[in-house]
Length: 109
Image (cartoon, rainbow, N blue to C red; front, side, top):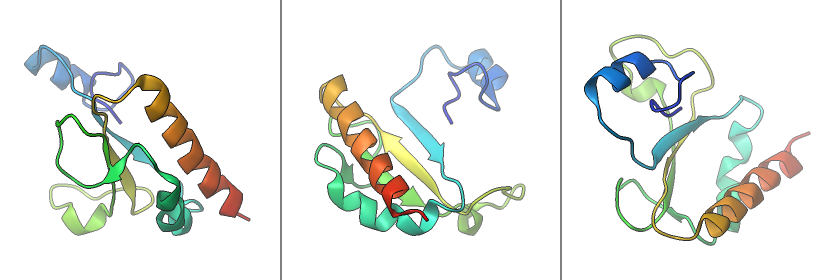
C-alpha cells in the first residue's frame, strides 16, 4: 500500500494533496503468513525493527490493524508490515526483503 501508486486506494486524494512521495509503505500479509512473521524477522540484516519513519535507516514494523482502526472497519488479516526505506543500497534492501518473505513461505504448510 503506497498512495503514490495508481492502483492504491486513496491515490486520487494523494495526487490532489501532495507533490511527492516518501519511502514509507505497507504490505498486507495474507492470513497464512501472519503466524510466521516473528520468526522471519530474524533473517533481516539491513532493516531494523522500529517505527520511526522517514530517517536514513531502513525500518520494518509488523503492526496489527484492528486495534488502531476507529473510522471504518478493516477487512483482511489483522497484520500489515510498515516499511520505511532508508539510504541503504537498493540491492541490500531488496535482498533483505526477499530473504524475509522466503523465510515466511518456507515456514508455511
